[in-house]
Length: 187
Image (cartoon, rainbow, N blue to C red; front, side, top):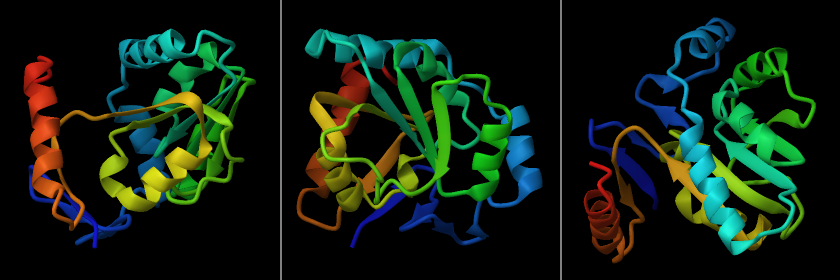
């Protein structure tokens, strides 16, 4: 069994919370797009720079998982020939599509656990503040399948979550995450 428990006590094992499925209503998606804080380009630039150090060729395809209404997806557009934003919410994808100003971005409804891309076809996968909704073992299997050789996964968020794999490695994995967070000056 897999679950993620955040520091503030929320718990999820597949897009559901105690209050029900979130981000589904059209009004909520429009408000989310209008008022949600936007990420700066620095975080994406760091991921792209890291990727370019490992793979100094043309960057073809990036995928932004849990894209919501497309705030981070847009930041990827200048760096890649093709960018796909994916979210489980129809309403979020409708808002993202309606506000899309980039010809190289497409949006689609889909889940991080079932990526509709060929093996070895994605250079960069990003996920901004949505990974806590994912089934990590299934997600990691899909990431490994679709990333190109030397491709990159960049997951980032505002706060720190506790990862529970339901296996003996949970404490060790969380200890590593916290060590990197504190040692890297991310506190």
